[in-house]
Each structure stands twice: as C-alpha cells, then as structure tokens.
Length: 205
Image (cartoon, rainbow, N blue to C red; front, side, top):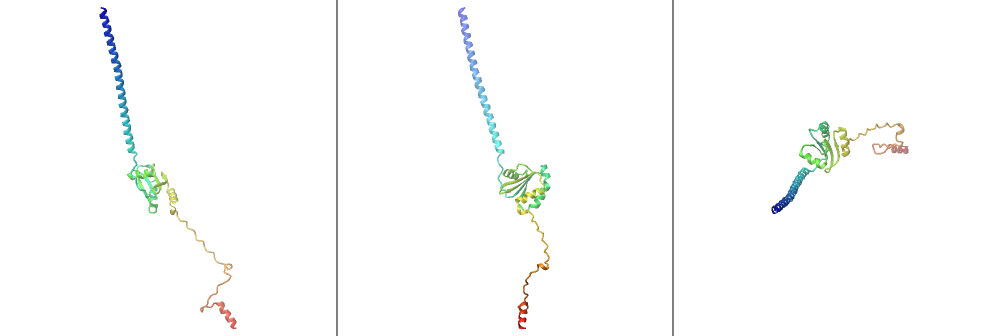
C-alpha cells in the first residue's frame, strides 16, 4: 500500500513538473510570438510612413522651370471673388500699358501659373508682380485702383511718367527805356554806312 502511495506521489510530481515545464515553455513561446507580431506591425507602420513620405515628396516636386521674360505678371482666376472685383481695373491697366511694358495675364488654374507662381513666390490672387530678370521686386496683392497701379508703374518705369508742360511766358513789350543806347549803323546800297556818308559830305563842304 505504501508502495502504491509512493508511486502515486512520484507520478503526481512528474505530472506537475511536466505541466510546469509546458507552462513555462508555453509562456516563452507566447512571448516570442507576441514580440514577433509587434515587430511585424512596426515594420508595416514604417513601410506605410515611407510610402507617405514618397507621396508627399512627389507632391512637393517643383513645376517645370520657365524663362520669365515679362516685367509685369498678373495672376487671377474666374472663380475668385476678389479677382472679379479687380477685373475691370485689370483690363484698363493692360489696355493702357500693354504696348509700353512687357506684361502677361495668367489664369491661376493653368499649368503655366504653377511655374510662374512657384518661381515668383506668388501665394495669393489676384496679384500683380513687378519682375526684373525673373525675380520679383514688388507684389500688389488684392484689388487696387487704377491710380494705385499707375503710381507703381511710374515708380518702376520712370519713362511712363507724364511730361509736365511748362507754360510759355508772354514776352514783355520793350519800352523806350529798354531800347539799346548805341545803334548799329545801317548800310546803304553801295555798302557805305550812313554815318560814313555824312562824314564825307561834311568834309567836302
């Protein structure tokens, strides 16, 4: 009977030891699997971030470079309320200076506007930019009056300033006191002055 009890205790301990071993092994196996799963998840996140960076980089690619030869660039759009407000003034401005200054009117929705806007750093519309050698020197953002535009055109293009007419002063009448004291001799028909003729006549007499 004691042998049986002893045997049962031994089996019990072996069983407990086996269960414990399996439990510890299972715990470590679960932990390893969890770490592996977390590592894969991190890799997927990194991969997604890389893809996002690539997409963002593609969006930030600058538009094609263009040679900006104009001295005045005007950007506007049909859907822009401020552009509509400035439309009539812009038409008058171009009609006034088109043949005097190199200028261009560009639709902000066009591909060309992307290049001009990027190179001239134009962020808002409507905008009129004065340009020298492809670089902006002054920007007029928003609606403006024709007088405002005229002032800046005359500032950057001095030759456009209207010439001031100087009024001609009325010549003053010459009075007796203003007459010359000595008169030039008046030549006669034979080339001898009257004074010389009078002196000769008096000597003969």
